[in-house]
Image: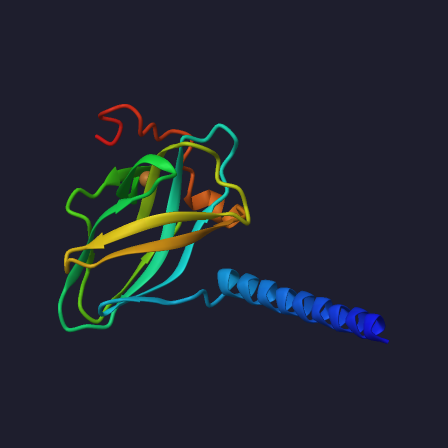
Length: 185
Ligand SMILES: [Cu+2]
């Protein structure tokens, strides 16, 4: 009697924990693909955090986030760091004739009061330079962002699968050699 009760109890526990795990996974996927979690850093609301999977030999990768400045004071993303790459820069991507070029923003990325700034493929982005390992879909990349306000926040960027649309705007690994000086000039 005691034994069968135990078995029943552990079966119940197993069923419970697996349903919790399933629910949790589904929630995470939803978050990463759609709403995303929102992280508040002072008056800033950060969402849509993500990066993209890289080819095995990739040296660089872009990181993306939407930042809403809900405050009355202008702010600025001034720097980023991560343990997954030699360094992290803040970049913009612009058209130079028919060629998309990336350029480091040494002054950082302005976050005007009341405005929304999107770091996204084809535009502003965080640039991981000198990857220690490829980014793999389903894994996560830690990144620490520092703002002019003095706030510093460690965040997690889920690694997303590349789509054709994303590849068009995020051609980081060909034609943009970040390892040599002057490539942006
Ligand atoms: Cu870049």
